Image 1: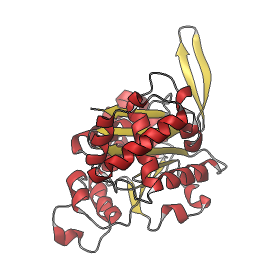
Image 2: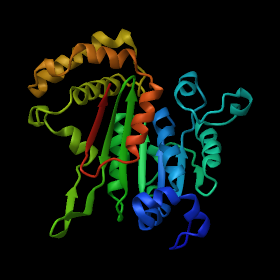
Image 3: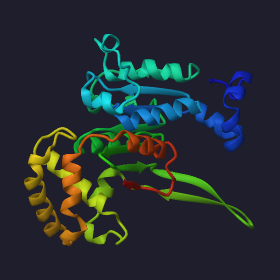
Length: 297
């Protein structure tokens, strides 16, 4: 899909979606280059959706070996152990995604995403990361923001039956249709650092309790030097202690972060496949007015 016009084969393959959003939108999609890091169940669902939709190219980064947890949530990993032997998660998912739509270029990049220079991210239009530390989220977002072109940045996290998506489209321009014509609009998105730095007491009352709970978990993992989701029920007393400290620091009533919710997130740090399907589907079509999107079942 390198030309300006869709080929006859592409038009036939994507006929149903072209009828929904038009040929122009399909052409723009075909020119989009997406980078994803962290092949969790939610990311697997997202990748499947955009590959079937006909994205221009998709690059996967995840050097980890297959684990029991990965097998439980990521349907792109073959169940045959002999196939998995010697391959990283990204390589296995790449093989499966190519079978979904041979017309989409799916490739693998090896290495630590945080150690790559800003010029690496310049090749992409969208960067989506999952299962990253707080420091890594901040770092990658800042690298995307330093580029001369706009690179959209997303983080996604799914724990048990809960999930959240952060969106940074930087300076986003769009047209809004009205009865008397079309109005050009602009949205200025905050960075990840700016978004999580807003004092809790200044946030609207409708902000979900899940938002605060996820920030507590994030801060706990950072303070303890843990990897994302490297947490268990034995950590609950320390997590509750940190919650109390943060609520006092932020002048927030502790009732905004129920102990039962934190217990659920600590005990169920793994992904729940049905929720992965929902979050992954939502990730592919996040509304431009969103900054943080939270889902709680």
